[in-house]
Amino acid sequence: MRPESSKNEPFKGAVQAKSNAAHGLRDLFEVGLKDIYWAEKVLTKTLPKMVKNASSPELVNSLKNQLSETQEHVSRLEKIFEVTGIAPTAKKCDAMQGILKETNGLIRETDIGMVRDAGLIAADQKVKHYEIATYGTLHAFAKTLGENKAAELLAMNLHEEKRTDAALTGIALSAINREAYRADSITNT
Image (cartoon, rainbow, N blue to C red; front, side, top):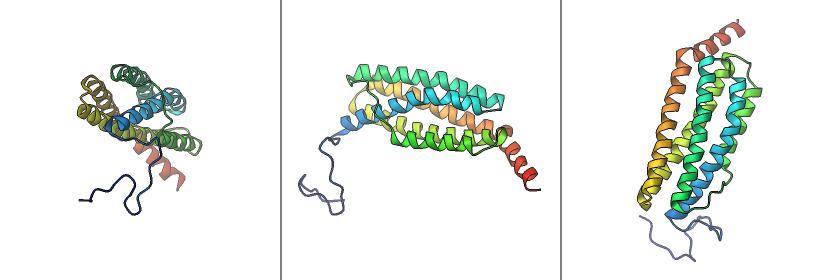
């Protein structure tokens, strides 16, 4: 266990916090909400591009369903802002921006068809895993803070993200990964 230090004496090697740094769990909760709010809003603009680049009907349907689900997540987040009294503002999410930049690169660097579909699923699952981690953390924060309605809404988003992630794995394993692998065999012969 680390010994306590005063605010003026940071631990050796510790980074000095900015003047507007989070000072408590409520601050972390607020920052996290604003972060995932930005991410979900950006996803409502990104998913249609993914739909246009997918070829498997099953993947196209999944991505379309995710779009309406993501719009619902945005609405729930707005309700969370309302019930917690936190201003509904989006804060750029560097992690999601990086994942989506990688997704755009993947689209440009893959052939249309099952290879691209396999890549889109991989990219989408990275998005889902980030969302699962974020919603899980925010749910725990909300419960600790006694924000029961927020915790309930966050749990709904978390459940849906986990369900979508499992569905994507099923789609990949049903045929897309095998077809993408066959493309390797044809290319390398």
